[in-house]
Image (cartoon, rainbow, N blue to C red; front, top):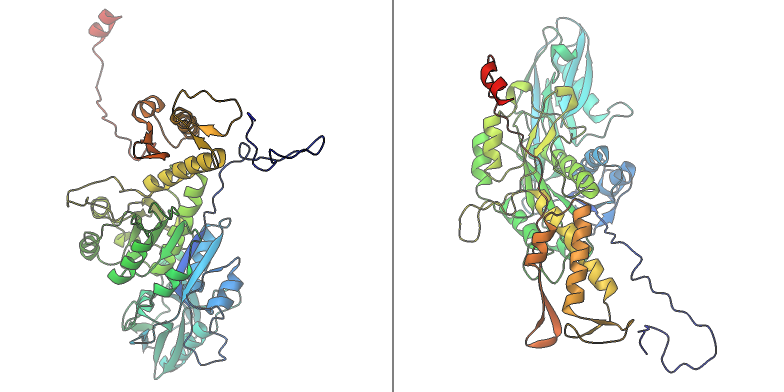
Length: 521
């Protein structure tokens, strides 16, 4: 029988027409490019508090709308706020959450105070910003310091309709407002408090006479880091391509980099082949960020460097970065992410933004960068650098320096894997130049090589790779000399690059030498 059937048996003798359907040559590879937001849900409020999340900690759950995020993880929780930033930057990707419970051992809520130091001498509006969210407090001429403090606390606890649920609660006593994070843990220290962000140009001016004293411009005292071991285990083999992980302590990052690493058990390893990327953000001084960046060396981790005075907390920066990266890389994994804006994120004031020297140093210190050109437009991604900087011998190496490198490689590998597994799922293996009948489910190294070249040509047409001729010259497909049932392939793709810099030497003249020019003509 020259034609190899999968289902119709060769000993079937019932008359006439029988057909089996084979779609191995018809389909195209499809991947679920899911986003996974990892963060803390509220679990510490005394039941049946409506602020407690209803989701089960450490179990991934898909979320399709903000109201579900508020319900699952608690209004004002870290995860609920992350979803708000994610939805604002990506409305089409499938988004999941991995909620973790608040740390119980050594966990404490971050807090800070605002003291009304002087009463107003005229009416006005106090423009407060809590975690980057605007809170307007009307101030009357007759308000005392105690009244202003009470009104500030009331505005924080009962924001107007349509205003997002804040990640803090407030109490007022003797002209002092105590602001406390809704959950326990170190990430509560990411929450900022300040006023008049846009200043006089934006119509935000402190009412005359009113004076506020801040104990700190960020909440402080939050302690405790969630455990991720159970959550990572419960992810199982579900593919999550873009992971937002806001905890940047060494132990947390080590756990996630191992899960998404290249070892036998990692998602980039040969056994699992799930691939994926980790995204985060870190706020600190220039010096501290450079020092921290030089301690990391992750191929799949990209951490965005944030100015200390940005009102938006790092967990929302990270969620916006992840969502916008997912949106861009899903459309085309080889295109750079530069100039993509991160919506709802408030950058630092102009005088505090990173300068070009600082940004360039970050790029050599394993930190991704962002820039703000117009304050009202918000920040945009500048360079999606990973933390990878040196090879296993400690020498400088840029093989995995950019997120687009592994994103492109993952797409190419998935395309190749799809072609091989769908076209040769139950084939026999023979030497090259073996004479066999047409239609037989037999494959040879030459046939496999031709298939890989054809797939590479398609990837080149789609803008993922280049230099098809050199690829052919370097591609090796051979039968294993010790196992006749195995094919070994040396696959050398030349990944396409990105236009990241346009350098011009403006060699001007005051006037061309006409005599020489005419002689040449």
